[in-house]
Length: 178
Image (cartoon, rainbow, N blue to C red; front, side, top):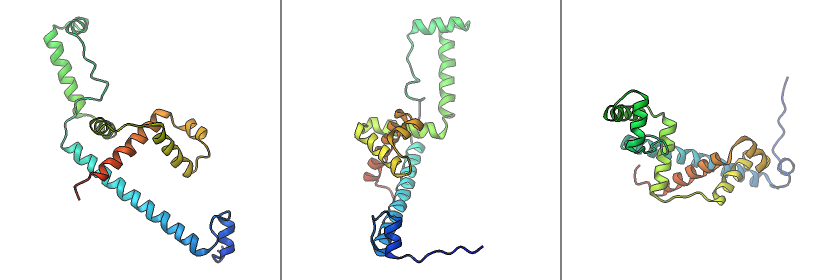
């Protein structure tokens, strides 16, 4: 079985691109630009991850945001009593458990905590336009419509992706390491 690949001609380019490109030169310029943009995205992603890991290596973590609900002494006394413990012993056990959780934070959670922390510190917020941009990129990558995307991805995850994108842009713009 021999596969014959046709020569790349202006008419073939116009037909395959639905008339978006009329000449081989236009199409080659488009492909070159797309490949360069993809390569730049990969380099930016690598730098972003390098920065996040550098921040992680020089930071300490104290649980996942939202998990550190403070209990009053009265509430802690009730919980301690349920376990048959006095308040001071119960506080010590809770502190030890919190320290173990900090040490055992999985990398994905740690990165999410870092991104959230940077966003809070730098007052980076996500708006509907940011989520629209994420939706646009998903459509460009093959999803047909916003409804199809939202069938597969919940809006909170789109917001997380948008936040990560904005933090990445911020870090790349303000990166002073090489």
